[in-house]
Length: 71
Image (tube, rainbow, N blue to C red; front, side):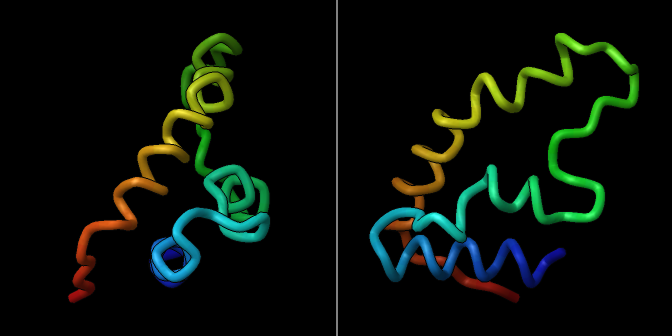
């Protein structure tokens, strides 16, 4: 949900990086339909999120240093 994303961004910013409860992986596991969706049923494509998750998390951690405005 939008509130979950906002909490993730705000927490990452406040802590200078993600904590254990506010990661992309945690958001994926706790969301009803998850973040990683594979409409084609292709297992390789479905696995991509988990292969690049660490790089995506690093991007979010670094992006938290920027000013964030929610509208």
